[in-house]
Length: 482
Image (cartoon, rainbow, N blue to C red):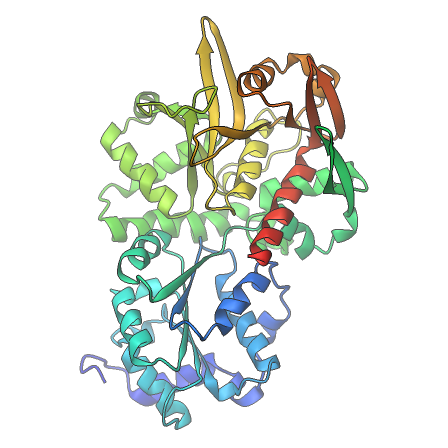
């Protein structure tokens, strides 16, 4: 035992017993068992069971997306699958009682608390692992020392987790990224699946299987709720929190990351400046920036800005989208880029809820759609912007093939029905299709669904809410199949 630990061993064992009530009751606490499972749980659980490969499972993600709940749901499923309750340990590393203990010390106490000879066949869950200094080193040692034990850890100071686990956990860790709720999961958590049915949409000359709304107006009402409150499971299910969104999300998510996690990880001196910068980005989510304009408007030096963007992206608060030309040629110098919040409801928390006629809704819808795509980490998403003479063109979302550097598709994200009536006004998209020899493209609308032909190009119009739902649904299917 660490000599520096001033808390008596029996007190710590008492705490372990409190945190692991299933040792006696054979059940997880009601507060967790009564919560709906996220759809991502189905993807996580096989990794929890995986024993052929000697690896710890590292569950990462922003604050408040339900990582701890998912650990409890895993324990619940293991109990239901017949695992001995005395083989399951949950330890919340953020509790000050463990502050002077190494993971090795905690494991000794686990054995002592149940008089176990060894930890073979055990599942050990460490929650909020980032509170332990050099956690990756310790965890790597445990994986090597206890080949018959499965370690599952969670952590949300994502920047540290991301970088450290890549470098020091090579071959010892499996990373699982839990993103904010998708719109599909939101509909599932609110038990509103009846709003959706499986139909077809026409894309070019093909009919594609697609989830469609029975009543787009009803789905849109939920979509606007999702834009405002949808990123976090707890917020979705509690009106009380929705009414005090500023305090809940700002205190618990933004302030802890900006004022505590990032400064302690990167030695940021001017915490207020970082906070001000994030607020500025959140207000302008979906806008195009250059380092020059950003520096001028925020009053922060360019080198510092670049670092802040890197830190905020590593902490899963923002996503930076780089620009390509009309035929997806990489630009030699990155002079401008777009910045999005990873979750539109962060903006509501900092400012105020928006409604569907607000001026900013276009950017928020774009932010939400991009946040659905972010669940596919391997995709090379960009936006296209170009100048020809005096004319400028832009396509909101472009997928680039990372081998050939050619665009695979382009999507125009609109919160408007105008272009369904006047598709010939989509001049940039027409030019983009012409340049890249595309016959078809997708355009989102408020509630119009159908195909329009203009100058030989087929544009499939899909309501933005339906499009967002399908990205989440298709992503989950793809991940399940993998």
